[in-house]
Length: 350
Image 1 (cartoon, rainbow, N blue to C red):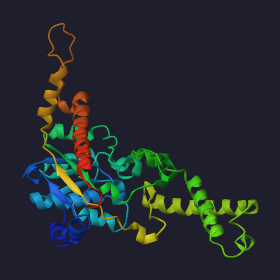
Image 2: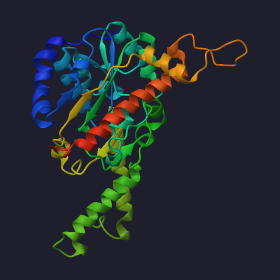
Image 3: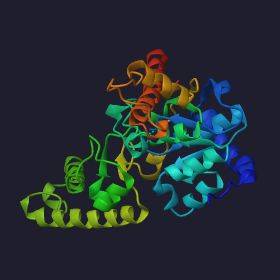
Image 4: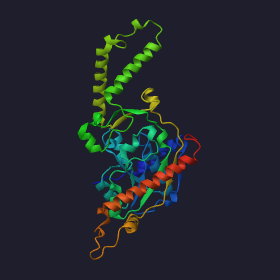
């Protein structure tokens, strides 16, 4: 049973709290809000980026202002494993992502928010910004086909710059283990360093800073920081840091820990998102069944006696051609809009 959101909390507390961030920090502009279906089941499919899911909650506020409808976000397991965050997620209408949850929400006539890239999009390095990652195996397309719910592609420009990820200290199996990797369906992205390598580099970097800025002879610096005689101490420090960080991260179920130009180097100050300028584009809705039938008709012959042609499936939501084709179509439309926005914008910050 999917819990109902606390609408009074959403209207009176949640959205007013987000408004300053939405209106004055990110200065979000919504285009195409009139394309949001006024009622009935609908699936909002958007790109995902920024290391933290700020794009999801900014989209929730923007789309609510334009349509009066609450976007029921399909969220990852992490949102429901953290204290306070899990309770907040339920209150604002988020649901643990699964096909069954999406089906139940659509069956109830809700507007569902899907981010098919998942952690792959959220935590990709800055060098891959605005390059859409894999849209899973088309689960959202199969669900939309099954329920006949319109798919509304949404392109979010600006979120990539709030936490420009230079790399990742922890990622994938080094953090979650094989079981966690299978459960979360994420992989190690380019730019992620093995934990021992990353922490050892951090220790050596600290030593370099100490040595370069020292006003006293290097022999007066801590013995573990420099020289071969400190190798054992450095190795022990790396192992200690590794155990502490992995224990905390595994306990919280965090899939990766990003490094940006400011985090973790500036501590809490480094966690403040950069004030990039956002644009959210709501694209033309897609009738999934109509699109899939037309798509198959473009290259699949009508079966006749002895023709050898592939017959139409009993159900489009069981047809890999329709599912994968529809998923690729949605991804392509979002990617094209992102590229247009990037060509036209003057700066990421104004």
